[in-house]
Amino acid sequence: MKTIIQNGTIVTATDIYKADLKIEQGAITAISNHFIPEKDDHVIDASGQYILPGGIDVHTHLAWPFQSTGTADDFVTGTQAAAAGGITSIINFTNPKKGQTLLDNLQEWKKKGESSLIDYGFHSIISEYTDHVLEELPILAEREGVTSIKLFMAYKGELMVNDREMYKIMKKAGEVGIITSIHAENGDLIDELVEESLAKGNTDPIFHAYTRPTITESEATGRALAIAEAANAHVYIVHVSCADALEKVERAKKRGVQAFAETCPHYLVLDESYLALPDFEGGKYVCSPPLREKWNQDHLWRGISSGLVSTIGSDHCPFRFEGQKTLGRDNFAKIPNGCPGIEDMFSILYHYGVQEGRISLQKFVEVMSTGPAKLFGLYPKKGSISVGFDADLVLFNPKIRREITKVKQYQNLDYNLYEGTVVQGAITRVLSRGEEIVRDGIVVGQKGRGQYLFRKKVANIEKTVTS
Image (cartoon, rainbow, N blue to C red):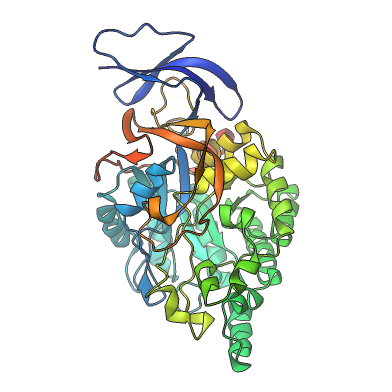
């Protein structure tokens, strides 16, 4: 049986046009001005709606142990929330145990991912350096299709690597076609600032921001880019939150560094004043890097519009308020660092970006789908609407307004960062490889239907990324 989507407006990173789609065996097989359905065809009427490529969230932390607790969403609730929010593929971060090999750790995470509703892949985090790590990198890429790793410059004793280790890992990654993602914060300086703050009795959530000032991010960003330049490696700076760090990326790109930047929806619309909310409400907004002064948002939006920011990632690292965030009620340093976002990033970016005139609809598709697909080895299977691509599609009605609220979310949380925000546009249907997984805003797809994403090496996608 074929699926025919009629009367919609197709949007890609370069074009907007009215056409019908034909879907067979999970892929787009034809695009035409008009198809005449056959008797057994499944027909979807997309009149008045955009047909967009499914979102690709390359920054998620589902089922992730962290800071004496663990994230509230696993691969069931997290991918249900993703699907409801128009995300049809994710790349989740592993979290290795001390002394565990990257390959053994990956097998554990692949097992966790089997319950996913949508297609899933992994970035391997490297939290401790050994020579064996360098030996595993080509195996990760060639045998497992894991063509991205992540290094942390903060969280000493848990995740942080030093500059020498970073250089050696980056150099090997670059040689074997792996892109290195970097959490760029100066961990040593932050640890000292936190100690000073607590010694003065400054324990409220707002001091999370004050002890992680923009200089700690911009300095680490510049250092990571310099190391990548020395190592001749592709580098991807995750969750850029401020103008200073973005400027470091811009300068590096002008020098010829193979550098890419990501930002997140919460940095585009929320600011550090939320951390100062009374009655510990600010604890809900603790993430790293922290929310910044509001003026940084204009720089981030311009970075998206100009192409300096290549992707939007949710950095979905959710912790429930009661029992998790409240662990730090008397000490901001004990608040689990992380915010939810996977379910609402599509809507937030559309409303504040497209609807309010900051970016074009094509740029929306580029940073939500095409850019991530190209950078992380999924293109030309995913990331656009074209013959031969997977039929990962979102039907989006731009005329409907909806209110974001925890009452209607799939995220396994007792709050929503954007509670009460009214956004323009609503997702009506989501298809993953041609199968309807969301209908009229309700998740109808079954857990475990997601497929593992075996991804291409950087060397194979480099020309694609820049085209």
